[in-house]
Length: 453
Image 1: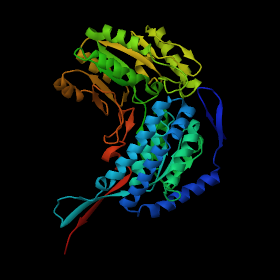
Image 2: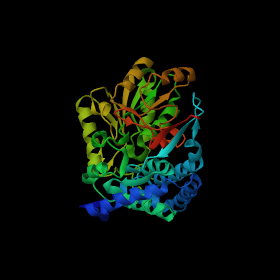
Image 3: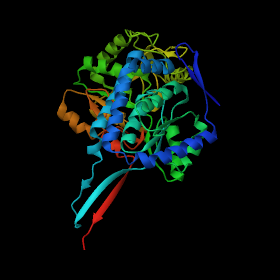
Image 4: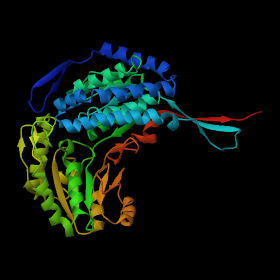
């Protein structure tokens, strides 16, 4: 099997990669497991030194890596640069904090001494997507490695140049051989790898369907999984909100990465009293977005990752229009591009409300009051994050507990931050990445109880 990296802007083949043979995979799996026995004994200081070097390499070569991201999946180069810089940040964060996060805890009991230790599990398989080809990998791999585990990466088939760069970064930084390994494989070989005795747990970022399949296969082997899946994040604008600010943040939250983000704002739920102003301003501002060559620093919106992705968005919009929605800006596909779009008259039951739309389409749903806005926000099978715009902070604090999601951001777009736990509820998955919570996902929480005689 050949994996192809294709530039979505030019539709030209960048490079082809031959899938690893079964025998090579077996060798790598065994090597990773054997390497863990040595890597787990390294000190926090040794791991900190190596991860600090990774951060330095990312910053030193950020233009090279950003170019690879843009060429493989179409992200505007300025956004790709920011992605690489964020990867350096997560390296620095865990280099600084891992010793504290995983330090032995003293617990008062009836024993002479009681402790909780956090010990690594072994080799962890990361199955990662194409939409943030560097960040998704580093978000998973950095805390996993810093905890003393080894990592095997199964990256998306269309971003194998990025995967190779990442593999090389850890090697160049001086990580021991086989602590981090990139597997050049398609999805067909994942089940066999999950079942391998070397694999102790799996982290997947991807679609709801992929999460179901991986969780089922891992469950048969009683192996832990962390799943970060889809989202249909509500962007709620109450009547007392700063509309100018809400529109500015909303456009970035929906149009960044051409809308190809699990945490993008995907349903704009706006109080009826301010809806006309919100819609008019939103339409005006998305009409000024620059669309074109993602390698041009002036471009705001590049192509989607491939033509199939753009066609999927097109079908979701068209089906919603057939059901009564109205496109008032955009609504057109040109090869892998989908124009930034604003759609009104959207309601539950339409694809633009019920499904995750992975593209630059902003559906607006009108709410009669705050209570209905919250109900509409919760009316989804997903539960990743909510943005709430209001100038009443007391009201905001009370409403936080009314939303069913893993995160609520007040007057700011939902985003991942190394310092904050990241993850969702319902069909958006389970488990947490980042912060102290993320690094403790792939460890053995071990109790020690001492009695003297």
